[in-house]
Image 1 (tube, chains in turn yellow, green, red, orange):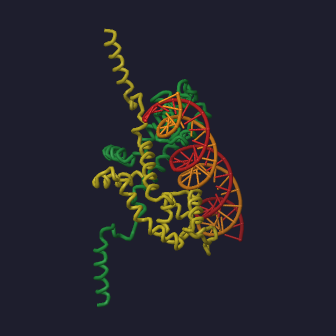
Image 2 (cartoon, rainbow over the protein chains, first blue to last red; image 1 turned 180 degrees about the vertical axis):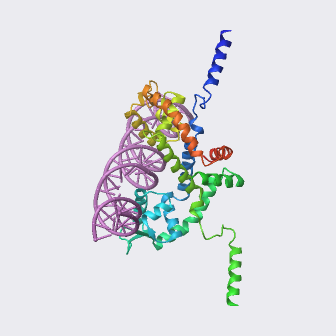
Image 3 (cartoon, protein in one colour; image 1 turned 30 degrees about the vertical axis):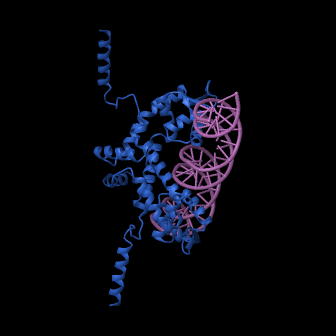
Amino acid sequence: MGRAAVSAEDNLLKLVEAEEPDENDYRLQEQVGFILRKAHQRHVSIFAAHIADLTPPQFAALAKLRDVGETWQNQLGSLIAMDAATVKGVIDRLKARGFVELSKHEVDKRRLLVNLTAEGRDAIERLIPLAREITQETLAPLSAKEAAIFMKLLAKLA
Amino acid sequence: MGRAAVSAEDNLLKLVEAEEPDENDYRLQEQVGFILRKAHQRHVSIFAAHIADLTPPQFAALAKLRDVGETWQNQLGSLIAMDAATVKGVIDRLKARGFVELSKHEVDKRRLLVNLTAEGRDAIERLIPLAREITQETLAPLSAKEAAIFMKLLAKLA
DNA sequence: TTGATATCATTTGCATACGAATGAATTTCC
DNA sequence: GGAAATTCATTCGTATGCAAATGATATCAA
């Protein structure tokens, strides 16, 4: 009797409060942000296993310079989704490695031009096949069809 | 004539080398790692817009402590995908904020126990509704059905 | 033309993230 | 029981990542 009455009250309470997700629980492991962070971590780890001497952001900078040729630092940053402060550090380290060279824009004196050196071009050409493997291994848990769907949805989200 | 002959040689060469993806181009923007990084960036930005005074890793630590109660630092780290060095920094900052308290494990003297303070519990309870909004906004570019598929595939990948 | 804006780059400060090395405590195994 | 291996935590070094402030240059508009 007592238990049944309490149970009825609980159910009523639940109905009344049912506007909110209601659940008192919150499963961190199911939140998209948490899983995105883990998926990104896993990819970085796979990347490091294939390409030990370069980070993903450094690789991105070289790959994009290969695409577009010489450009100024902030423009490169916007092409690879890095703000000015971040891209500066990346380019500094690539310069120290001899992979890029810097020069001043003749007309617009604000711009710092970045370009691949011969060594940088060799490096990116050599690494691209490894990058293809990295992409494959990252997507390995998915079937080809799943991977295609995932990439489409991920692109929508990014 | 000369051009036609060269073209035929080129085609033959392509067939011979066709084991590799062959393409000389490499589209960074289409690689899963690059898009994962951007999607993660977008989520962090949405998070910050809703919860200004806490980072996603800090939130994750509080949310997980709410789940499992008092536990030792490294265990908490493994539950939220942080290595020992990273979780230490996160917990240090949460302690400085008064959200967690630390104590020594009576039996195993190596363990540093972490637990929510009353203030920490209040904070996480207050923030969870905002976190639900963050999840929704992050997934907003997808329909409900797409979001469900995406979460399933993302979980496979992470 | 000049005053207001905008762009480019740098610097500082803070917060992950992780490899590697270290030391203390515990567990395992012979 | 004791040596070896493991676990827990800390520290150091390096590398993103971003907000905010600053200074130099360029562009726009009144």
